[in-house]
Amino acid sequence: MRMQTMCITAAVALLVGGVCMFGCSTAEPPVHPESLDDDQYAQNEMVGNASAVNESVAGTQQWQVKTSGVQVPEGWQPFAYDSNDQFDPFLLRRGTNDNWDGMQQWQVKTSGVQVPEGWEPFAYDSNDQQDPFLLRRRIK
Image 1 (cartoon, rainbow, N blue to C red):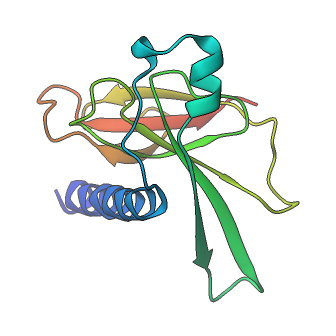
Image 2: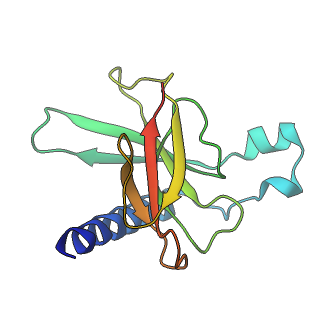
C-alpha cells in the first residue's frame, strides 16, 4: 500500500510539473491533428521550451516539450499524461544538450498494480479504474 501511494504521488508530481512547464511555455491553444493536413500539422506542432536546474549536475538542462497521441516519436521521452485530453494526452520531452540520444524510442502502455519487468511507471490516470498506471520502456 505504501509503495502504491508513493508511485501515485510521484506520478501526480510529474504530471503537475509537466503541465506547468507545458502551459507556461506556449502562447496559443493546441491545434488538433484531425483538423490539419500533414504539412499544416508539421508547421503547427506544439513545441515549448523549458529549463530545469539539477543541483547535482553542473550546468542547466534545456528541454523541449510537446504533446503526442499514443505513438511516441523517435527522440522524445514520455514524462506525463493528461487524462482530459482525448487527442494527444501524452506530454513528451527531449533535451537540447549534446548528451541527449536523439534516436531513442519508447513504448507506452497501461497497467494495474503490477509493473512488469523492464517497464517503469511514469504517470497515473485517475479516470481509468482498471489500468490506472502508465508505463514506459525504452526500446532503442
